[in-house]
Image (cartoon, rainbow, N blue to C red; front, side, top):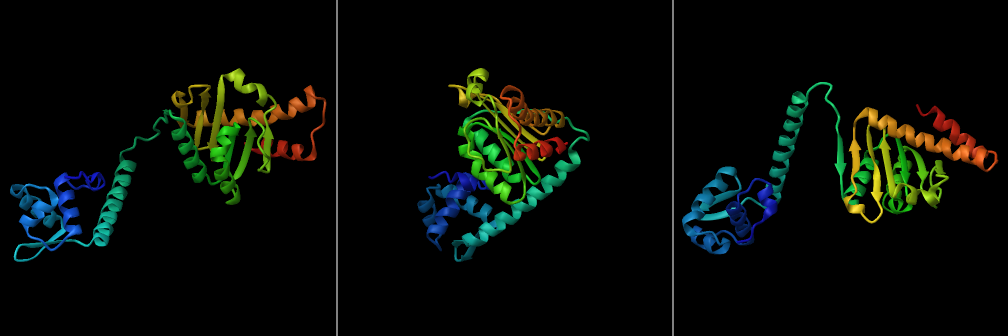
Length: 262
């Protein structure tokens, strides 16, 4: 008997899932035929059928012959049922949540899982994204940032390596060539709308086990956002003081934008 885990996730028992799928593949049939088709013992098949009939997923059409609710109708009902349940759950959660709840810092591990979370955040952004990325992460996230830029989100990008300039407000970290060795890995910082922050370092050689922090804690978000703002200033100061060069008109424009980003 196949497990049909997807149906089990939708509230079917293992027997109910096997019974319904057998009926979908061949109907109408009687209980004896269905027992053979589904692999469910004849002593159990009628209990399973009664359960499915009570849920409205199977019909006894005549003389002990059974047929399934059409799959498209079943899917429609399940979607409606679960959407209703999710909405009710959201309302219950909203009522149950304590006021002024502390926002904790959560730890994510696994490079792909972190990239997936970063993509999700970027897609959700509505106003601004402060981001500091090494080229490897940019390969994963660059197109999502471009999409955000196209829908009007303000991108504030600090490139931690030789990354093509794609955004109106983008600089390269002055120490990018040595920084990975200095910090022992590749950092990632994604901060959206002053509401979420994903920050941490992928330790060299241990990327999948490196702890990366995600939070909605306002103090953590503001501190990390300010850290990225200061990297813009660092870029400008390094040019003026260490290299004795004047800022270009475009760099002065970026400086004014970052300064006004309170």
